[in-house]
Length: 293
Image (cartoon, rainbow, N blue to C red; front, side, top):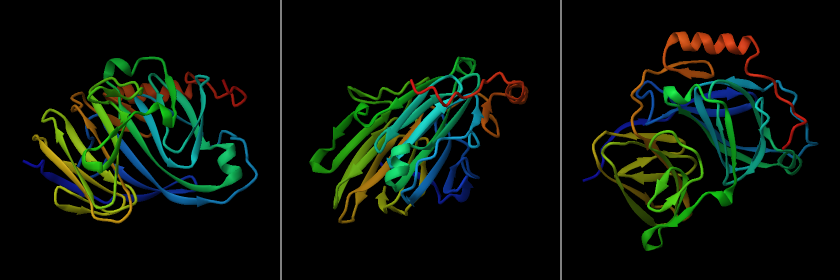
């Protein structure tokens, strides 16, 4: 039995700085998929080579109560935060940051990518933390491409990268606080792959820049589909003559209250007020851009 599709959503364009993104989660149909409460798709954009400029802090911003996760299809991002973390990650890698009880971070194109230019393309997720973990100190991990395990799909259909969570004996190094997953499926031309799902988990799929057929439904570029809460299988079909990418993600339902405002996701309105108060009182610290350790 196939898992039914309950929602198809094409997103809404939004500007983030000078970049155009497709805002997909939350939307009028779903507030979250498992612990994933936010998804932006940074459209593939050509960046011309230029003299690299160092960050000046104008794009720095706070977070609290979530883990941010930037997954890079092409290009490269540099990360700084007020907890002293720094990292550079290129295509196939990710920037993971646990905002915990409050941190300021700044993500921008890496100096090398600025100098060389190229196509920037990626995703940003916010992963909601359980209430007990929202009070923890911030943390960070630069997830390099070689850190992410890959499994070969049956019948030479392609490969699947275990970006978050586990699949069989293969586990991502990304720290998690509940049962959650994100798989990057690379499906070969004229190929298909069927994935069995767990009834207790929530599932969604996203097709970034190619078209796919998922459980019999054609899914367009930069389109999100959300499945119902019953079990069953999900079949991905690539009818194209080139490889396509599909992101499958979700996890156990988030059962605590969700209150989101600006860059903060907490469990009640008072906690949101405290998040703003602590930020304006300087408790999140400041970024030292000279610290690259």
